[in-house]
Amino acid sequence: MQKLSKEIKLKIETLNSGKLTIDDLEITIDKTKELYERLIVLRYKFYEKKGSKKQKKEVLENKSIPKSSQQQIHF
Image (cartoon, rainbow, N blue to C red; front, side, top):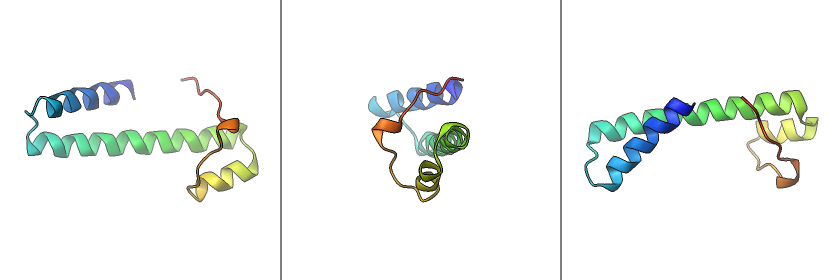
C-alpha cells in the first residue's frame, strides 16, 4: 500500500504542475481504485477481528463508522 500511495502522490504532483497526461490520469484512477479496495478489505478484516456485530453490519451496509470506535490498525 505504501508503494501505491507513493505512486498516487507522484501523479498528483504531476497533476498540480499541469503536466498530467490523459494516460497518466487513467493510471492514477486505477491506482486509487486499487488502494481504496485494499483499504475496504482491511476495514472489514479489522471489524471481523475486533469490531462488534453492529459495526460489521454498518461496514457491510457502507454506513459511516463512529469516531468513538476507531482504533489503529498495524501492518
